[in-house]
Image 1 (spheres, rainbow, N blue to C red):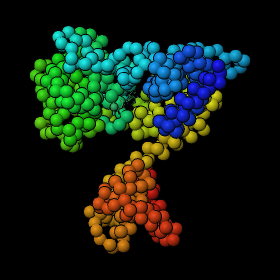
Image 2: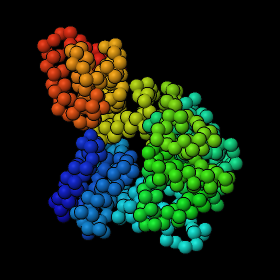
Image 3: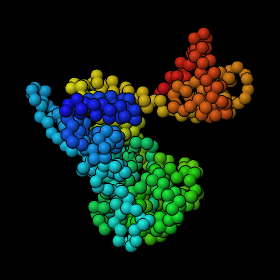
Image 4: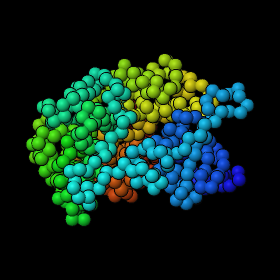
Length: 475
Ligand code: ADP
Ligand code: MG
């Protein structure tokens, strides 16, 4: 039988490898060992419980698809966990856990085929007697106030959130708008408010929905001619949480319908909670009347957490995962990763993963290696606008000059440098770089990249430009 399990698993791996990033594949799939196959169920051995949880949280969907392809729609997955701390033992303890194919823990996984339970938003459009309808909140209980650590960076937003959850609809924080950059805790806080309200007021209908999903539902309802039902469904909700509202930018139909729903809820003393990656004043392509509604309540910003808060977030996370890591390592990670909390967590998780499957201790060396990768990755996230700004400042010209049609040598060179760095530091295509830097075509950008390469070999002064700019853009 063993060969069979191997075959099936290696077919699954081919599919998985094709569909996820190679680093993730290496980290999470290479260490897995297929154990046996019995009827429709494949057992795989994973290095630790943490590893199992991670797979379930992030890769259950792709695992299912791969398994169904191999074993048919009744496929099952069983994890066998090699218990940690069994280094000296000849036969490691093992523990089997059936995959969430049966138990289901991932709320993002609502349309996964194998799941026997459903937390899908009950379809509001076909069921009559809508007032008796139980609406699933779509809340993630793992995002709660208890594990949303407080710091200067989030104090206002967090306390406003608590105030709202004590008296939904009954404070002047309506709507409550939480805004801030990626990975700073908007989604976490939004869920926490909902979870807390559900605990204090079980009878209240709470709904968490991303603006993206809201938009999809709306479009669907228009297609099916059920726009009124859609509106009606949202109007009976007591606490509506809309995540990443900036997604509505430029979508005037959805904005319109949201405006009506918002007004109705607000007039009836219902609570609305909104998150966005920008402050209301900076939102683009959102209708003025909607923006002015957002400003009725309170806008609270989530800022970058300071070092102290970063350390406590890490410690708390490790504590919850039951992992102990030296103080100096925690501090090292927290000191070096400042951009956002998601990356902070990502770094520590990679660290644990690396050490757990390589069976090496987490030491400062390993921490440095991993943090380096993270920091490098984040450096790459500069925008083309930013590159143009840095380059034109460096050559003391306006961006419009840099983009102009002129053939003056120093301007052409500046423009070529901007293109070169856009290629180097962003994921944009040649065509898109060209169109953003003075409306050129992709061939021009390609030519620019080659020219910069050549000149930095042959021209010492030019090489200095490249080095200077590279340094400015890498910070
Ligand atoms: P956003 O929605 O702003 O992009 P998320 O809410 O998804 O960010 O947060 C990213 C990660 O950081 C999540 O895992 C979240 O639990 C964690 N996080 C953010 N802020 C905090 C905090 N104050 N305390 C604990 N964890 C946090
Ligand atoms: Mg989010």
